[in-house]
Picture: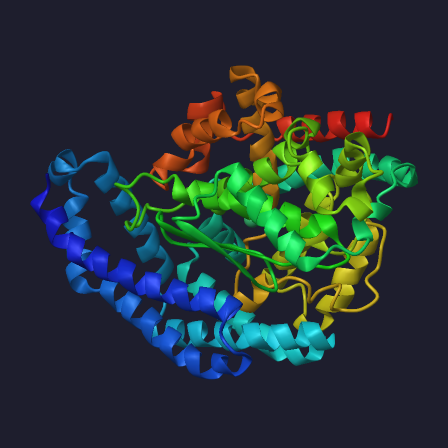
Amino acid sequence: MSKIFDTLQPYLDKAMALETARNLFEWDEQTLAPFEAANYTSKVVGILSDEYMKCLINDDVRKLIKKLKEDKEQEELTDKEKAIIKELDKTYEQLESIPPEEYRAFNELTIVANRAWTKAKKDNDYDYFAPYLKKIIEYKKKFAGYRAKKGKELYEVLLGDFEECFGIKELDIFFDKIKSEIVPLLKQVSQKSDTIDKSYNFLKYDLDKQREFNRYLCGYLGFDFNRGVIAESAHPFTLNLHNHDVRITNKFMENNLESAMFSVIHETGHALYEMNIDDSLTQTPVGSGASMGMHESQSRLFENIIGRSEAFWTPIYTKLVETYPENLKNISLEHFIKGINKAQPSLIRTEADELSYSLHIIIRYEIEKAIFSGEADVDKLPQLWNQKYQEYIGLTPANDAEGILQDIHWSYGEFGYFPSYAIGSAISSQLYAKIKELMPVDDYLKEGNITPIREFLRDSVHKFGATKNTNQILKDVTGEEFNADYYVDYLKEKYENLYSL
Ligand code: ZN
């Protein structure tokens, strides 16, 4: 037991409470808060952010951390405490160099910018959002500039906030591989995409029935309703206050059956991660997922690899048909499985199929890279966006609402986040290869038994929170660090089979 660490504890607790309050406002903003609340609530969020920063970044805490990093003190620390110190180091690196008034102004700005984005998207008016986006980018450049070590690119700094194991070099290699292997495959598939009929998916599906079935699906996967809730928002997401309060949202569309189903499976994957974090870690700086990429691997494992498999639907497809007999009575399980796996180039990332998904990410990655290297002008981003969609997906958006305004992330200043989605997909394939080696996973799924998979993930990934990073987890579970070959092999095998290529 370290006495010095005990002295640090009250600071950590207070910071945790302030962050929890801020998160709760974020949840509220996205779910229940009235439209006009933003300008006023932003003041509250600004003050909370400011207090959070003061609570962690101050001379007392700085001295304690310095002391705790000395060899003699390190010997006294538990592994959990060492991980917390490492995490605090990261927080210091992220925040210390940013003047508090700028940090506060930025946090206030994101609340207003998010509302501007909502309006711009609704009105299909990029020009309305552009001034906010410019200000956000200016702040992000400034902040990254404060933090960038000599010779380090600004975008590299931002990427590191979401995934410490992946910088520009690693991502360029990963994405080049995807481009060379998946773009040609998508071209082949899109020529045959008419061979799969999916018209049943776009009939009218009663919204209340959708809500009920999706709640069932969420519980079927293991979501604990005593420790979590589901609400609705414009963009489905997961937010956790701690491991006993994990919240997800969903979005329902009357003329699209699968959109909400796969969103809820996806968010449940995130939620299970947070619910399974060890009690000893929750409400500490390492009490959340290891990284955004690792988080996405869990949501995508459930959404795509498990959730789109025939074995998964075998025990529950009848229930789905009974929920909407008028639309599905003539759709066989085999037909449905082909439908939910159909690949077709499309414009909206969140609605994209598994095969083309990573290309949507590559487009955003390349645009963000260009923004932070100074090559892209904010006013011309819609043109750049449309040009890249034509190049990689073969389609041009008809308007900015289905183009550059489709994602929420930039309105919150989340640059460097998108690659996590693709990293997550690749990790999910790597983990699944291991799961298949260890257990008869298809048999379990056909029996409606998700427990062994969930327990494996809990014990090998979830419970550690952020005490290990992505590559450490992968190495411990699969014996090797990140390897994108599993992902490429998985996609090739799946789509070559599905389309008899
Ligand atoms: Zn996600």
